[in-house]
View 1: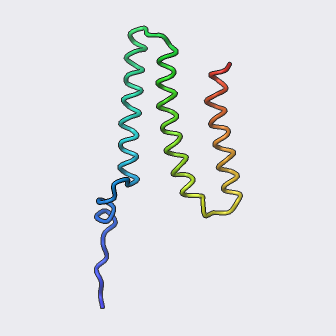
View 2: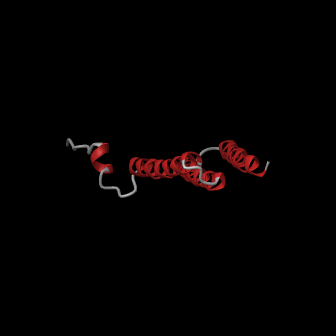
View 3: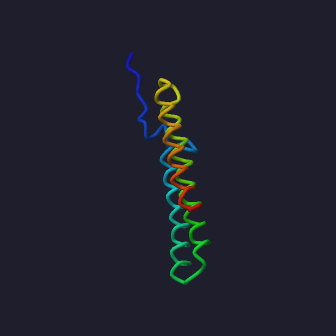
Amino acid sequence: MATKKKSSSSSNSGNVWSLNKVSFWTIVGVTLLFAVSLVLSACGIDAKIVGWLQGVATAIMIVIVSILAWRYIRNKQVVWKVLYVICLLIVLAGIVVPLVI
């Protein structure tokens, strides 16, 4: 009658692309990009290269967070999807506009 319930940590530990693992390695990768841009900036390297590295790090984080946000709202009402698209557009504008101006 009684069945044993697996704990969530043991069932997720075998998952190759668990949310925790993706989050950790994203932070590690982004940290490396920011560290390289910090060192280059301290050495007086061209600001465009430093800005490009920081832009790549920011884009990686936005992509990961956008995917996770979509997974959260994909089965919700249309208003959530509209809010998601509006937020993404504002984030993209916040990245692109300062680069253009």
